Image 1: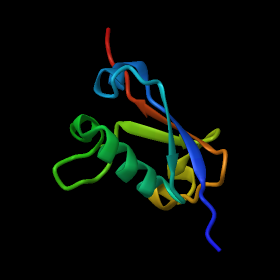
Image 2: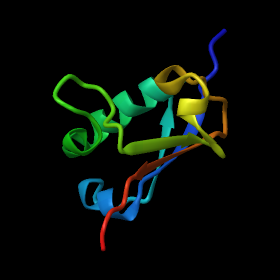
Image 3: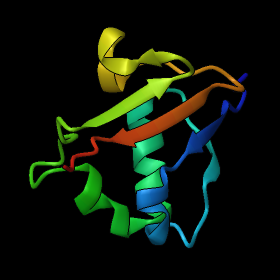
Amino acid sequence: MTTETKVTVWVPGVLRVHTGGESRVMLNASNVSQILTELLNLYPALRTHLLDDQGMLYPFITIFRNETNIRDLRSLDTQLGDGDEVRILPAVAGG
């Protein structure tokens, strides 16, 4: 028996231009890698802002599962549970 894992993905303001203004997206996936795949299928313009030419997550993009940075867990293999929240945070620079 397979159950769907519904996850809320929070999109930062700087990237919402590529999601039609959506700040949150509900997706079904069991890990962070699958969430990114689903998100990029819905919003292909996000690809160049999140992934490099080899399809790897840019080092300046931080992703949290709930309150924990996925780099402190299993990175893109971090498992997700029903009701989890995934937040994508690009680094902000300026002076």
